[in-house]
Image 1 (cartoon, rainbow, N blue to C red):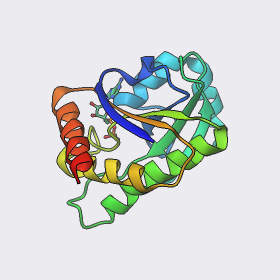
Image 2: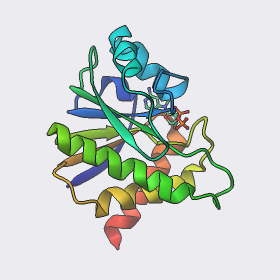
Image 3: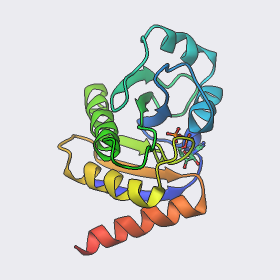
Length: 168
Ligand code: ADP
């Protein structure tokens, strides 16, 4: 599997599936969630109403609607509460479950945002190692994972994490 980090906007990614950092309602929100709903169009919200929400650490699949990506995988990251409340396991579960949904859809290229490190407050320096490591050790048919980072600090953190992993 190839794993890479780029700086950019996930809504324009030409991959089989993009991952949304959603909330438990799956009915849209701010940040990347708002951007994905805006770009995918109102049919996405209609579809999500039928899904009955999503638990933290789990993931659900929808069509991509107006996005270039064929699928959207909606996962709910943990809110940062200091790191002693299971946050790393829940964050790892988001990446694992998202790859499981990708496999079910037959998606071979998947773009992830930096789950939980925006409004949910997970420090990116602690989230990036969990993200990279989990993707590396998960058994999946996905051939390309791309971390799409919205700002320079996030991009630098993922890029350095990938570099240090390749050296070990
Ligand atoms: P969470 O609630 O899981 O923290 P956020 O959407 O607030 O989710 O933030 C997660 C990450 O997604 C942050 O690094 C944020 O800057 C980034 N982000 C926001 N919009 C986009 C976008 N269009 N494409 C990629 N990443 C985005």
